[in-house]
Length: 248
Ligand SMILES: Nc1ncnc2c1ncn2[C@@H]1O[C@H](COP(=O)(O)OP(=O)(O)OP(=O)(O)O)[C@@H](O)[C@H]1O
Image (cartoon, rainbow, N blue to C red; front, side, top):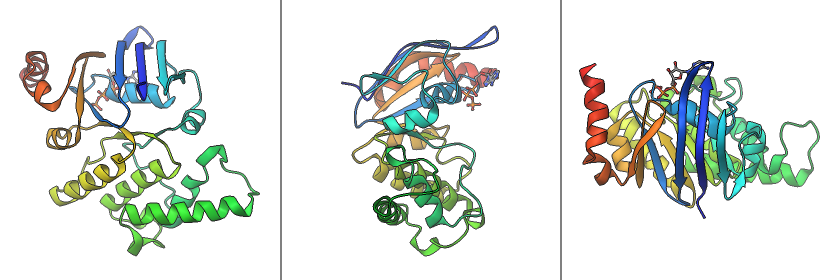
């Protein structure tokens, strides 16, 4: 069974159809990148998957269960978690506190005042694990707002996986990074991909071709090709989409 199964998905903004009947099967355990020219609908597509936008038609299944129509919180509880292009951390909380907050979302515990001690212990332990994974132990007590940009993005990735999601969506995880920071982010994403299904939107083709098992190309709200990096590199429709963009 696919991790994500998307059938005839559409999204209209008024009269404009921005996602036009997308069909896609994302296999369990793969890193699946979505690429496409500016304005192709990539962010909108991810917003539909995470429930940030309601779809206009079609269906989205996570491990076989319909998730379209659910709230982002419910979708996260079902095991799909999404990071954001724009920073999504609590700037006044420390790195560790941010991770702990994200851990409390596990199993739908949400933000409540009273919690059983066992849940607090489990969240602390999970936050420690994630802190180590994202390599921010030395910055553990620093307010997230005071972190360097690349560390903030690493924290965001940490928060995305802290809740225990099996399917993780990353939106432009290396945007605005230097070459060294990008290399570190790639290595973190590889680690995050272990035992999970990952979808990424990324403009940096170097990152896409290095990380992705398969790539889908979205053009004007339609997937024009899905395949391995090699297949996509040689696909005439893809060349046309990008050459068309350059010529414009
Ligand atoms: N909330 C909205 N209301 C109306 N139109 C929208 C809205 N969000 C996106 N659009 C339109 O949908 C189209 C696709 O936008 P989207 O941001 O999904 O593309 P994208 O592929 O992510 O672009 P980029 O690569 O530049 O981030 C654009 O024409 C955009 O103007």
